[in-house]
Length: 194
Image 1 (spheres, one colour):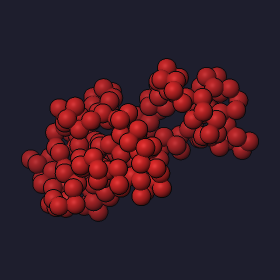
Image 2 (cartoon, one colour):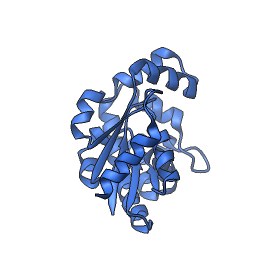
Image 3 (cartoon, helix red, strand yellow):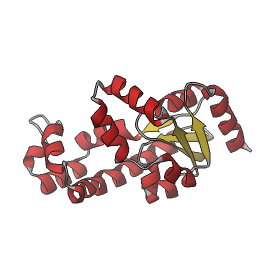
Image 4 (tube, one colour):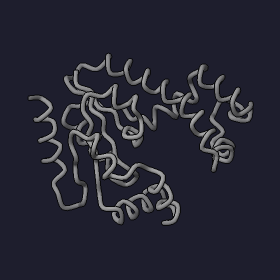
């Protein structure tokens, strides 16, 4: 089994590539949605969050108190790192279990954080970086998230840039609304199967 990482910054189109892969028969694990699920279903994560952030980390009924946590970690990189150290290992463990249940020669993991995570790069056999021009990424993210330009620009500034990330990538898919995504994705799958 080949474990493929699908990486890229906000607005690059990694979710589009993930959907294309799924249409082509490659199951893809979405780290963002599974991290959210685990934060509300894993007692181990809940206990660690409450110990780190207090009981206010969860709302009555067990839902994550996103506003409270966002306020706590805003501008506090150390606290953000501690939270990442709780949730990321759980996500990787969940991905491994999920991957072992798939009946496929290739499985994908979609995450914006692959390039910043040495552990992710060790777990994955192949990494695909999805890129797009910065202005196009800003436009896409503003539209998708209904967010102001400044917020999206700030989020992009906090992510690894494509030049830095490309040194870890085995494949680069250009999502600039000009290059054919289906063709690029098929070529990548074909190369992986060799």
